[in-house]
Length: 292
Image (tube, rainbow, N blue to C red; front, top):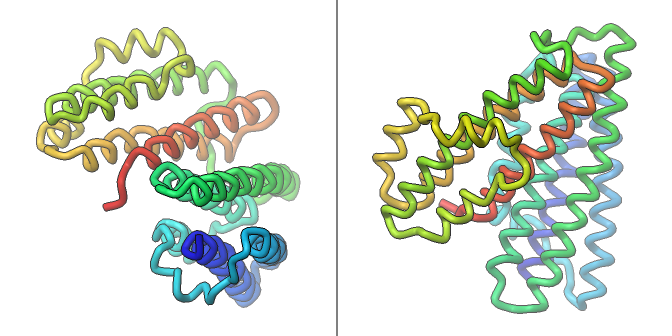
């Protein structure tokens, strides 16, 4: 429990400090709107820091210095900001989008800790923290949506996408899900070959009831890309295979974010729903994938 409290405090403190530093950086660049977005997220993170302190008191654990637990945090939480901080296109919408992704990663991390906890009390509290991260992500999604509409009204340039209606999105999803299912089918077969039947069953059930029937049918007969086939055949342990299974989902998420940049109305809502479905699957795979 002291380690879980330390991790929770470190996650929120690191986020608060990073948002404050990014706000200063955006101010120095003259990006006033993006700086304001980071200040808004900084204030929200300070409330999360206070919430963790109250939670720690409720479980009768002191909050140790977060610095002692920073090495336990998923490196992706910092890497995601490092990848975009130098971009001249870091608008408020894009900042909120990265923050949403980080909340999803924090949710996946807490869920992973809960799944592997040997103490029932630690498991229960980790599950509570995971649920809180989902609430944080939901709030940031609302901010992301408001920022997107504000930027469109203000004429801020957005990435142009070729999909302009829901039918086009459906076609993209059909092709993408067929490829994802083909990849997952091949990965599951390889998992069975190396003796990981549980991993194979998990991957086969991942998309059940979510993917359109037409895509399922196409995926059942399609072959994965040559590079994927070679990587799958060369893998002898579960970890690299689960990473391979994530790749087509990540590619789809990137494509959907591009579509979102130039969509509105029904297309915007459908794209957001597709992104949420894709991210949820990525999170489930992340929970199944042991740390390297």
